[in-house]
Length: 202
Length: 202
DNA sequence: GTCTATATTTAGATAGAC
DNA sequence: GTCTATCTAAATATAGAC
Image (cartoon, rainbow over all chains, first blue to last red):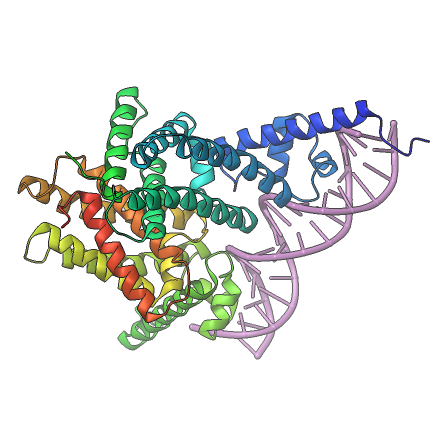
């Protein structure tokens, strides 16, 4: 009688769990939360619907995990770019560009993270992550004000506006994803960002 | 055997229907779409759940009607302010102020219209109305550019950004609805709007 | 441990009584 | 015409076989 799982068993279980989360993420990116039923996700992962409950106590728990992992990656990337050395306004501009490009490369996932109808538990996570985006932007705006490069303003409100603006533009980008359109979109978005924070525009 | 309903009957039916829609709107503003079940709405209107189907063929149809009426009022107000005489930038600023004040006076409804999780049919309506907001803003930006008061930019993208920014700021306004906070919020929001479209800031 | 089959829950929709 | 009671459908969750 094994009172403890062997290391190999643990690895195998974790791998199965990770695989499940990865497949669920793909399903969500393709069809959205509402249509990502337990059985659809299980099918994608090649397991039975019932087996999902070996890894997660509920569908909501799985959905939250999917959201946290995917959104966490974006927060991390955003944080890295915003905390890189350089002038705050320049960092902000770079951050928006990176964020936009990543979103446009995986629109389905971006839509799921930013806007797609979702169950309450995911909605709560989304609010939480929006606050994180907002805080990151607000930091940069504050720094810009402190160094006199940006005009006086309520940094939190500007940051909220920025995240809303970027989200809206990325979620419904009017037209096909041609690469030329992507370039224009990114250029316009960064220009809008600089205007929005009040960076002097030439 | 009456082949036609009498005028009195028609009036009564229409009144009942309007009352149902009004009550449903209140319920949605209070508890959101997800929890506005047919029975909850019927209770609020003082009728039985089954009776709802005398007026609407499905819950989705009722929800869409609720959304259209409420959102339509906002589009109309926005259009009036934006089409009033005066300089485009000034009109834009006024429009954002009016929009924000209306939203802050009925936050529940504003949240329901702008962001609350909703069934697909309502989501589709929301997209449609966002496009209308966007078009209205885009018009003003175009006029501002045409008259040389605003810098060159993609008006559609700026308009999308604006509507996203305003929505985000209004939906999660960080803190209690004290009237002083409302004034600051409106002031910051209009200032942000002007910066966002590139109006020269003093 | 994983699958199959089933139970449970919830909400939308309907039918027949009054 | 409106209400009561019921039906249906979908999706989550569980139980027991292998």
